[in-house]
Length: 426
Ligand SMILES: O=C(O)C1=C[C@@H](OP(=O)(O)O)[C@@H](O)[C@H](O)C1
Ligand SMILES: C=C(OP(=O)(O)O)C(=O)O
Image (cartoon, rainbow, N blue to C red; front, side, top):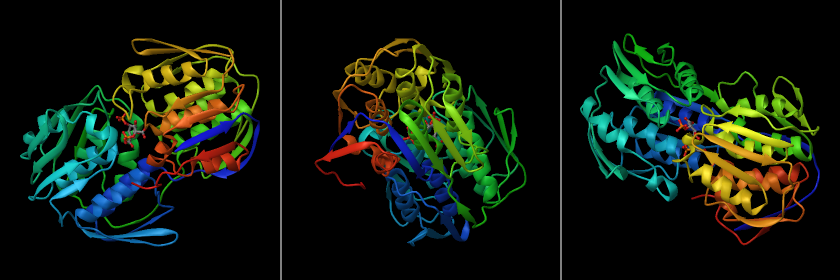
């Protein structure tokens, strides 16, 4: 599918899409519980649908209703020897240790970019917890056989926080008086989100400096009612769109959220955007924008919207944390450089640093999403101030996290034309 965004000012109000990070964690916690959990404002992006499918294969009964999803479970009782996590990095890294709680041999697969993302971690760590694990040279599919026995372990958190999220969630179901120690943890706020979610489902972890995670006496997940928060990661694109091309009011955004990507507000403030925060609403308005410095090491998903913002700022913006981008849906440092280059924006990459030379004018172009949802959305936002339309190829990549994105952009006044069709679900 190709989507063309024509330049033009925007103005309007929209409700943020549900957070896939929160939704996938809630599905996992509901699966680990005994009884029926109700998930309100459920996400239906591809990553969320994959999580629901995995939960079903691991034994949960899932009923979709108009405004909620009911998940009935009695813990991990796989009904299949194969699970597929779609394209979700969080999904596979979270559900693998959870699936390993069962003694059944399970083959875990995925598709698209997930087949080339690193999974060596499991081969190194799961055997320490009595789980057999075989990868294809650190790639999918993974063949595992548990049951996982929680033990004191030390792991490396520098590649991704998602492996730790998976271990924490799995330990929560059976651990007793054990500690996970983590060295060099990145994306820390995502771990805060995991701990918050576990607590909402009745499991407490004693966290020390994001280095030690201690489980005291044995606990169990309690089936709960949970409302999925609006997604700061997706909303970041709309907020940047407003900052560079008009005004927008985005509802259902919790400024007290544990989501790391609410840090977009700090970047917008540094750039000089007009911000009017409400309790569950954010209004952003265009002002004169200047280049800024920002460390995105702990919120790597903000790179694409930050680049769209920086392209519109006068001067050179410096963003730290490029090393965190190599193993996402694309190698995002390079894909941002390539696709924004086509729109006339020069980006330099120096080790962990990205320099975006903004304010030089954005050109109409044909760009590729590289099948990466956040690259498609960043290009769409940049298009608002281009000198001619921008056509995005493989534009359906947005379905991974934010299927409503083009509709939301149109709702706030973006001129969006779609050519060709692609299924909205996997
Ligand atoms: O836990 C999560 O929900 C996520 C953690 C982050 O990954 P890393 O920990 O690999 O940075 C982020 O990039 C990803 O989109 C979602
Ligand atoms: C990298 C992302 O997700 P995941 O790692 O869960 O696939 C993302 O949403 O940008």
